[in-house]
Image (tube, rainbow, N blue to C red):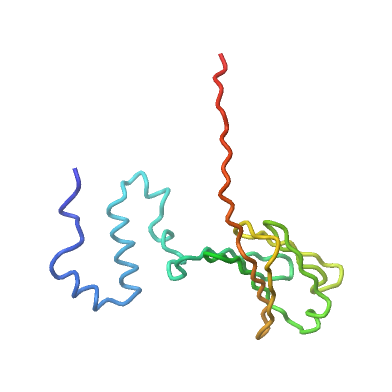
Length: 159
């Protein structure tokens, strides 16, 4: 049976939501989820961690610290972006960037012998990538590859 006494919507709900700040709404939703989840699931799904990154709807972000590079990789609906802070504009003259379907390889920064591999959050296309430098940050934009080919696997019963 559904717990109707816990149903959060009533006549005053519209007025309450219009007067709430985003932080208050976030706390309200987390509190509500904490009350609704059974005790056995609370350990698996912490309501405080469920909505981290809620403000960046439609994108998934991953931070990676690869040696001296403090890069961040994230995806949107159509592209994968990798942002790399560049400490010296001399790095732009010597760096080389390559990518595979799931990795970005950055060579020759900060030292010429250095090589950094950044795992991408989604599969990307071979062509169409671009890199732009602005305000001390190198941003690499790579189009995502939408590959929806499925292969069926037969299951056999062994006796």
